[in-house]
Image (cartoon, rainbow, N blue to C red; front, side, top):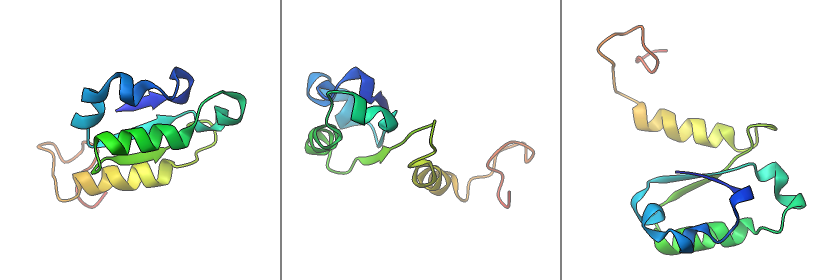
Length: 94
């Protein structure tokens, strides 16, 4: 699931089912946090309160912060899978 911090830190409790059902949460645009009235700690705490197994990634596409952890999680999810067409992304050995 993707949550932009510009949407506010009330979203986990406002839409609890989404947070209970997902496996990973990308909190995007974290580079904007200093300019917003939003708490990354509240987002993380409320989301993990709803789903303790949730993997939370705080990322910024602009600065690249947190993307390595997100990519690593994705790679782990696809490891060992081979698409029908080996020229497609995530082919083993690529």
